[in-house]
Image (cartoon, rainbow, N blue to C red):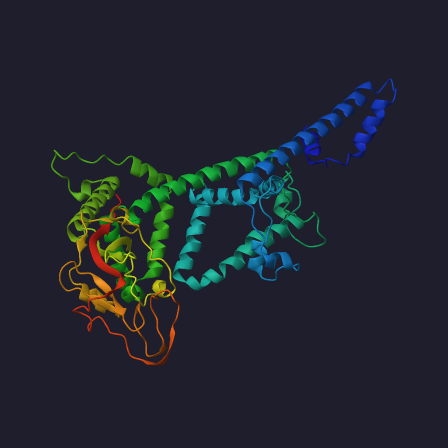
Length: 512
């Protein structure tokens, strides 16, 4: 039955086998004695075609759904032009085919048919560490002892493993010993002599057959391995993540301080520690803890004495009680260290933000100023936006000014900066007039010679706002424009823009 199912599932869809042709021929013929054979072959052919048609339709439907869900990689011009395969291994790895149902199914079947050796090795390791055969476990401890005392033997271990675990069993399988005889005299006289030609074929590792018992056994092991990995992953993440992701800043800071101190200490004293003996004791303790006797001792140890009774001396406590007492003491010391020695800055970081209120002189000639925009830049005469003729960025209303991303307002209102001279000097702004009293506006200086605002550079070119005629070249040598220090008291006529600075405190958003 298994062979029949495997043949049906593994046969190609479009090319029928010779048995199908024979079955169809027999089904068409009027043979009287082959009615059962004819009907069985015809049913098998129809069943196989129906299975593959249904499977192909399902695969096509799933592939269409996946192409809608999974974004396809956009080919670049370099990939379209390059026809030769990439020589770089990393590029070749990145150019491998994408996900498809058919490829995934075929690769999974191949993988499951060959993964049995890994599970067999895992079972051997578990059997070795669980003391099911004490002689094997003691042999492992002896080898581990030699490796700890002489670490250079670690380079000899792979060679010995290949010789003992691979070559010798393969040779014995190729040259087997004679069959055992019930005669004791024959057994006493018999000895193994691997001479002469090979008596058995060489042992080869072959994948298991699909739909066989070993195939489904590998599926079960693979299912359990995935469950074990998921459980181990969740436990590791649940244990390590709360202590290292600074969700509890005091605990994570204490771990950071402890690790920094250990790193400094270990960098100075690492060469003084007996690492060989530490590894030897640790390995023996880990393997001996899996012994059934050790498990029974830990399970049969007396329970911890209640707090109402007087404490017993350490000589009367069991191993489990000693471990519990030591762990509780260390936990108490660690908690006191975290609570008393780790001091965190509870107040969030605060900074000052600024916004410039820009106003423009009315074009009606009445001398009134129109509210224009609240901009993050002062839009001075030599700014890049001013020179290129761009509109100043910002918003029209004060309420629309938002704090920077990740910050929130620390104060309820904006405050006017009364020290306009300072921020003008910090930005090295020229061609402006500072108002030292009143509303603290900073005006553009009106250039009477050219009828425009800005700073007059030496030479034949001026930079700044124009009067609309677009002329920028004059004959003769021009003098330097007045700076804001020279125009501090005002000259009666000002430029078309003025600005003043507002400030407000912001603080970092605190995420719980």
